[in-house]
Amino acid sequence: MSLVINNKECFFADLHIHSRFSRACSKGLNIENLEKWAKVKGLDLLGTGDFTHPQWLREIKENLNEKNGILYTESGFKFVLSSEVSLNYNQGKERRVHLLVIAPSFKIVDRINAWLDTLGRRDYDGRPIFRISCEDFVKKISKISEYIEVIPAHIWTPWFGLLGSESGFDSLEEAFGSQTSKIHAIETGLSSDPEMNLRLNQIKNKTIVSFSDSHSFWPWRLGREATIFSSINSYKEILEEIRENKIIGTIEVDPAYGKYHFDGHRNCNFSCSPEKTKELNGICPVCKKHLTLGVSYRVNELADVKGEVKSKKIVYKILPLHEIISSSLGTSINSKKVWTIYNKLIERFKNELNVLLKVEKKELLKVVDTGVADLILKNRDGKIKVKPGYDGVYGEMIKDWEEQRKLF
Image 1 (cartoon, one colour):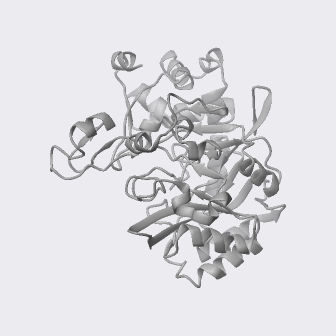
Image 2 (cartoon, rainbow, N blue to C red):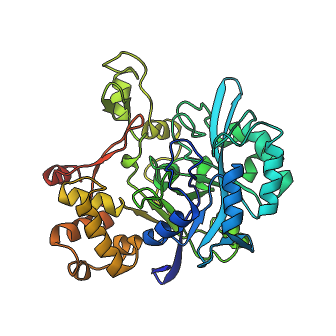
């Protein structure tokens, strides 16, 4: 069910997810659960994820019907073929980069997989590793089909983001070389947002997309970040919006919510801002080793645009509804109390994105108390602050509202 925003019909897509065949992913990830919870979330289109995995691809083919590059379930829910690959190679030093790949048909996916089989195994994980450079990967996959889209995934995360502090690339051109013009979009990842990315001249003319990289089907993971399209009736339409920067906008979480926004050491229980990191000369005061430099630090390091930059696209920065309800109740995200309220809201208002973005307070109060309703509206207005995540630790909503007011 699409939403109408600013008099435009909007379709919400999460094209970067995983199957149960990827490491550290829910064993309940199957087509049935993905469709069910995508509808609850309010998503109109999902990536299949992991089309490189033989068993998962068989399940996709058995359960989805292809038409115009879109895959349909029996009830008509839409998927598009997508997968993530990990490139691990040497270019002056060791490089480890994750790329999101979107493909136009089963026929093309079969050709991609046949080529990947010449590079290594695909059956051991949903996100396989290949020893090939970013440049060569794009060059060779483009020969299979010009309609395959390659997007640098979670571009700022330290170890596997192309511009992350540990990947070592300072530009798209350094990574993709002669193939840079074929990179039309970048994925923000949880720890950055469009405004942060627009501080780099090399990104300002790229399409900035957001997807969840979800490892489960639960609605506090699936669709927590998404891209808003104006039409999703064919693969051609989706590809055109990505390549020509015609997307309507994105759904983001507060970048501080991401696991790598600030600098720090998880094992030392220490985190700090980029400014503090510079004071410390990048050294952890607990263990005296180099800090893991997060996204905020890395963006500051590479930014070459002066002042703040506002996106011309719609950008919603919202935390998932489960986070909001659990914070209001002071209980865990997966508690029975949270689910009871969540289910009442979905039963009344159809899906989560409608609740988070559209439903008015007077309508919310017919289902929830003032505390929950006010928090939903604060979330919608960007008035909830988050203690920044770092070194693999998610950020946390600040529950002390007096502290919230000081920070806002």
